[in-house]
Length: 342
View 1 (cartoon, rainbow, N blue to C red):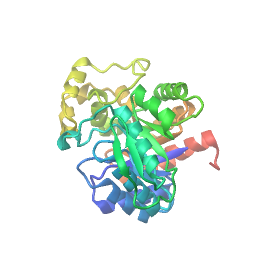
View 2 (view 1 turned 30 degrees about the vertical axis):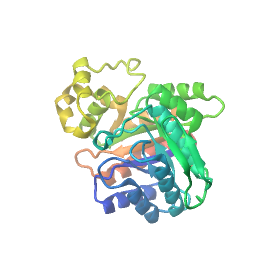
View 3 (view 1 turned 135 degrees about the vertical axis):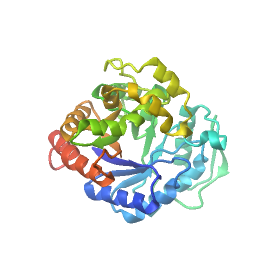
View 4 (view 1 turned 90 degrees about the vertical axis):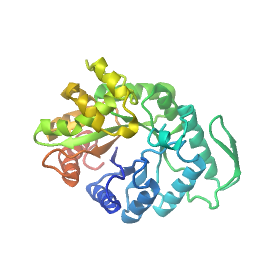
């Protein structure tokens, strides 16, 4: 069972690195950095994290096949793997951040992800490669060094059924954003099992996290992020009906018109219609007791790992949010499900 910390390069580089070191000390197994334009550069920060930590697995969550050529991603991932002592993981998704600004076309995203994964793996041989995909092409090139290992894990972020099917057949894990309900995790497990019954893939929930003794304070901290996730049209969830959750059509219309690079502020006008139940469907917010119940349900539904992005509630900071979650939620729930020695 894995526990990952998700960060974005909003903060000073030194703070990002120290947050990663703190997460390792708390027992996190993975540290992820979003390849988000145009904040601090992802591989520079990941290298600094590699040099500051000893055990955690590190990687982009996630990069994409468009903003840089997959051969350059291979160069970066295999360098990071060498620098970290074979602790790198290759996280990839369809991408959205910065693509409009740099004029990159998101052509056939599921196919592009699969081809990018294939090319990155081929380049690990250290031999010349020619790859003629429909989207990704590479003409007789090779890495100028031989990677220290060829089997760097591949984790795919996908909320659509085609991307999840591809991940089940190709990758080591599938990451689903907003998978906050047990029903959603069971649905994900069903789809991945049907796509590749012979090779079970890890199913990972990626959730924003806020913890407080005041449950309303935790949900207030998460509401804008939940509003964007539920109304932008970029994140697909399969079990909202089963959970008896219906996002108002006016909110969906308004949210669907907000460009990605506008950030969270435009969603403030929509947020009042996003209920606590809606926030709970896509995020982890509440008291330690509430979160223990919800994380336990995700475990029981087949979750193999959790990636959290802390959003401190009033009265909390980044460090205390992590500390309370590990001590009061993750450790007791993991122990209850897997035993104290795991």
